[in-house]
Image 1: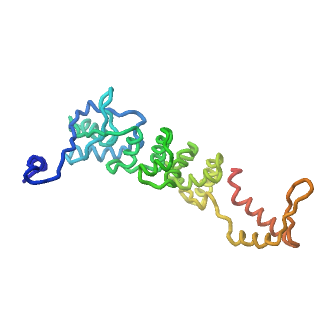
Image 2: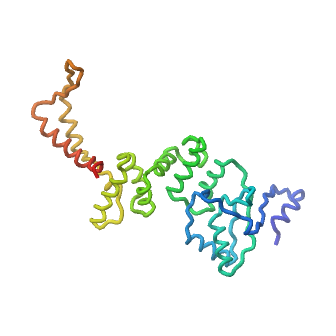
Image 3: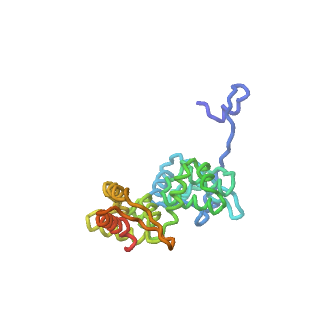
Length: 275
């Protein structure tokens, strides 16, 4: 059976376009993790999966690393690294682990963590945190979108998410509020978003639900009532008094119904601001 090395070695004869992109086998003791660098939170179950894979002798992709003054810093492959440590602690020493150099800027390294298919899928909060790092390095949302091959609206959504309050983000982590719902709450209620979410979650739990939906958090006003309000206002006239103030002159017999519709809107859509 032939190998890639043999194919490459005789490339002048066989005409192959195969080239060498080296990886290195690095002692586990020379690798290190920079606290706070990894945008992914460590998932112990995922670590255990890699531990079992190392013990079973399965093939695992190389870690992406950078050589620094402190040693060899892991850029991608943190769960694989912790899995190797766990296998060693379980009595199956992993002396060395395959690594490859990563070449690029700080922003390139962050984008690599976001787009890498080897790592555990990012949660919305983790993705937003990565985008925020790039923003803090002077990148614009449109530039980030091109770098990570996502839409600008996706980048802005995740940035808005990580700018939500701590308590609201904790509710997202626990699964009580979806990431998109948290963003919608924040955009609708601003600094009151967390208190609105807590109030709506209490109502949802009282009704036997485990989490709030967007409809629970931001109830939609009746479309028929909205149309009716437009019908009632269509014959109104805009007047300006001598003081420069504007007044709306309503058609006869419409004031009471208009007031009722507006009161219902205030009581429904805006009730969360008082939570």
